[in-house]
Length: 387
Image 1 (cartoon, rainbow, N blue to C red):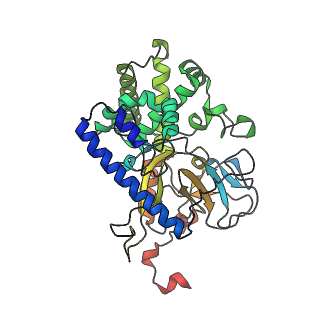
Image 2 (cartoon, rainbow, N blue to C red):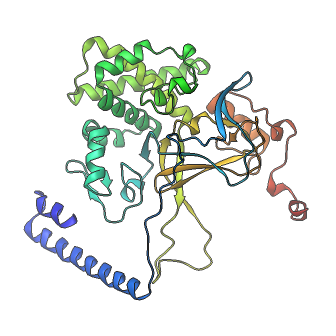
Image 3 (cartoon, rainbow, N blue to C red):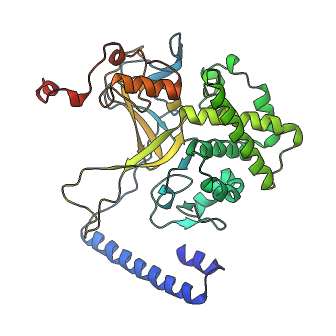
């Protein structure tokens, strides 16, 4: 793949192509040598089995969506859940890379790829192979390709803004501008029901657009900023000759404001175990603690339904682009499932938690850790942790 793309590149001189070709062939030879050694050692690297539930759902049969008076919609245990039990397996609806992580992971499936191929037109995305490249172009990159540099260079554009635009482009390419705007105009948040009949988790539109954006609790200045950002996005789309009918401009702009609020409220960082621990013969460094890389900012429909507690009973982990949520505490039947929104009692004191949650999510936490003002782990004596 690398050699074929090298031959099709028109910007490199013949001399530069020859030098790069020599380096690629050298790397291929080293890979073949390693492969031979692996066969001799009788080590087999089988592709990992993709996690999934038996039924056509991202949710386990031990959880269900309910509404509560105190917290609104959320996930509840329909039967007793043991620690370690998997409750959600889902692929992100959309995601964008943070910082320079785009150089190591596929821009479509987010898997780590060390032998990737670039986009034919821009130089800030890579893909596993032609399959992911074609899927990305069909999904969003055709529209985004010319917007990569303007968005990357603008210091006021946050990753959540990129993510909102990614959600918009995916829906537009999937549904068409007419159908999308019709769905936006008829959508009524107060009348939408999160039950089995609504197909919330399987419907492409509702799985994104029905998420809460907290618009009614935001400050005027914050909403004004969201409207300005949406206006800038519409202008960029028009400047890049994307055809938005004039009668739909208001609908598109309003939907982008809602998507900006959704990504600001519901997105989270996908974290994976660092693959690079140092320069040595076996690519490891002794006595170095395990580190994790924050790869991408992602949006997941099922995980976004989980409410916050400073003493969470579930944790989400990333496995080759798949988000897996599992229990870390026993959860009794009928009890609500909780995650943490970036702060928990083990590492943050009550004042820090309250400030973060109110500034970012506009609510005051009423979990046991907050009501009883539990101390941080570091403030406890060593012996008290192992009573």
